[in-house]
Amino acid sequence: MSEITVTTVTPQDWAAFKAVRLDALRDSPAAFSATLAEEAAFSDQEWIARVERAPRFIAHRDGAVVGTASLGVHEADDSTDDRLAEGFNSGLSEIFGLWVTPLARGTGVATALARAGAKRAQQDGHSHVVYWVSTDNGRAVAFASGLGFRPTDSRRPMRGSNRDGEEEIAMILPLGADRGTLPDLG
Image (cartoon, rainbow, N blue to C red; front, side, top):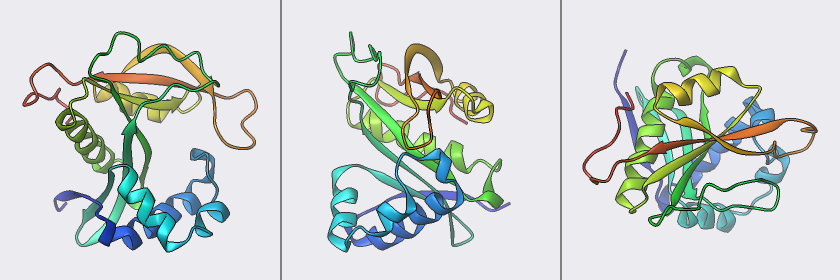
């Protein structure tokens, strides 16, 4: 199998990010809080602003787009018992919007995207990365655990419509004190 490459999306690449994001919403609507209809209605300027606001990643294999993920600064909200930020002087990043095309699942694409997000978080001076996972999604919990993410006590209601009673768990990955040192993600 050929090599996976992960690139950081630039404002000039917004259309490629839009295409893969809409593919993700079309393929796995239950995995996201946004809907295909909502995001398909975004203007070009809104897509460019999204790319400028937070790092976005696209994974490629053999010239084809095979996945995407985003990275943001973790922020607690009112819907969670989130105590994650307490005691972290250098802040927390959060990986979100992770999606892999159906034919590329289980081939290392998600790992490559998570690694790219963790490296960027560390470069940005963050000490840990948070990844929210549905407590009902055993495959996602196993994936995150296999990369070194550990469960926390923080839970929140699953975001999006039709999610009554479902919860997400915050899983956290320490990035190490040395910016040149990442945990073995791979």
